[in-house]
Length: 133
Image 1 (tube, rainbow, N blue to C red):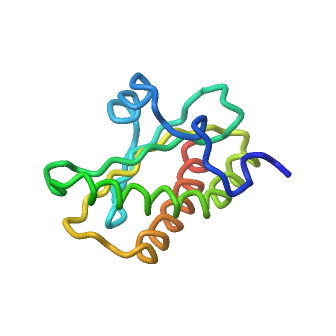
Image 2: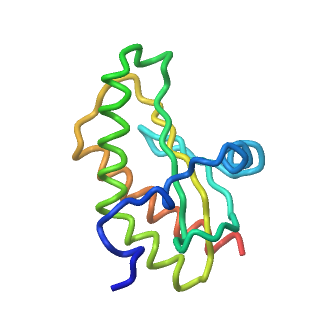
């Protein structure tokens, strides 16, 4: 089984290099799909995976770390369970992308809503990448 299609989430799949995160925001493209803003860029990294992602939840909106962590956990889990949607397309196209999910809602949404939106985001990212070649 292809390691990127397993239902795991390794450190190599997470966007953690400050240089690449800054590049995503400075040079990347973005779109909104409530409750997220998505910033993405084609990237070149040697992690063995075709995508790296990060999640951001505003400290200004959610003052308590417990709430921010809950939203990040829910988002990561939704991504982990559905990342195959994006990976299948990226593998076919032999492309790599880095993207950030920025949670913009002012309320804590249930997991089911977050998961449905992340599925739509992953589908849209796979289509966007096709168009931008």
